[in-house]
Amino acid sequence: MKYNFRLFWRTFYRSFFASKNTPARLTKKRFIFLILFYLVWPLGSLIHWFCFALDDILFPAYKNHPVEKPLFILGNFRSGSTFLHRLLSRDDETFTSLTTWDIYLTPSVTQKKITQFISKIDKKYFNNILHRGLYAFDRATLGKIKIHPISFFQPEEDENIHMHIWDGYFVTFLFPFMDEFPDYIHFDEALSPEHKKRIMTFYRSMLQRHMYATGKKHFVAKNPAFSAKIETLVEFFPDARILYLARNPLDMLPSTISWINYARRQFTEPGEGYFYIDEILEMTKHWYVHPLEYLDAHPSPRYLVLKYDDLIQRPEAVIRGFYEQFGYPDKPGLDGIIDQAVKETMTFRSDHNYSYEKMGFNHEDIVRHYADVFARFEFETREELMPVQRVELDR
Image 1 (cartoon, rainbow, N blue to C red):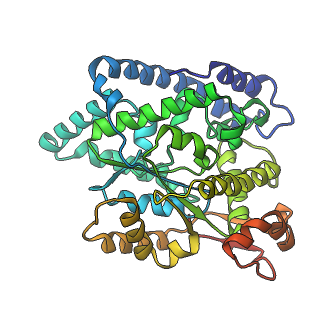
Image 2 (tube, rainbow, N blue to C red):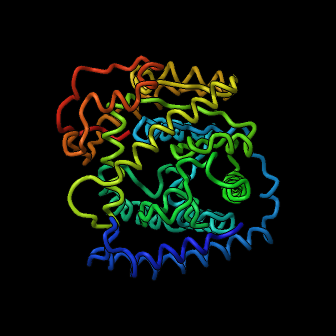
């Protein structure tokens, strides 16, 4: 495993000495974030990498642990992947996922084993006082974020795991100096074979550690960013099941622009208005075209392309259908899991306000940009964009 020290140094340097006229300009808010980040992150990274080394000594068997029939949910951002991912994770007899806790606090086998031991002691001798305290802290901190439901104990997008080698698209949410980064949004085509191998070898090892430590059989991940790396993904996980979710661009694009701007604004103060429009347009178009071209060229019962509307309108039929298609065991009580997940999703209100006009789009622009997508999926083109401003449920 190799850390991208060059990129780490470049993002550090740009943040403090060359951020003028960038979205990450050095305001007071940005300065405070950077000081806190560089006080905490390097120390945490040293601890994690020490524990990764301990894994090789104490639990070397993880290296040969199988990742059997993993399910990867691909597609653009804001296309229903969070809903489906968290719904499937409720079937914990079949699936396991990386939670925010797993990704950022206990990525190694050693750390997972320690926390499992502490959890048993807490449950046996202290009436779960530590457990209750952690959940209260979770609700008071991450639970306050409304654009996307976040919790230490909920499954999260494991593209985040690449933060530990400082080599993945999600690093750009903290340090949006896009000219410094490899072209992650065209991963399969743009990165060298050696670079792709380095990133995916690390990712596979993280899944093996998790599966080894938890004893679970099947892994499920939602990773829109993996739409760019579908070829490499199949190379490293030849037994993978891939489910591609497609949502109408009239809904996906404005929501994605709003979400990415919101997420990056948590760490920056770029100014008024919407940023990254060209980046997002290129990314979303490629994340429709590239994975669909690959799936079309490699037809297999291990792959499925699904429309967002079908998932939302008839989730039980869709989910039971791909359980059977992908060879996962039928889950008694799955209908109850689905009903509960739908109810919770419908009660979550996102602080996700956006104006199409302020983004600089009209109806004709979006239909033109994604003409092939509208034609393939027969999405409604509508006569005009729906309300100029809207609030949507998290997807």
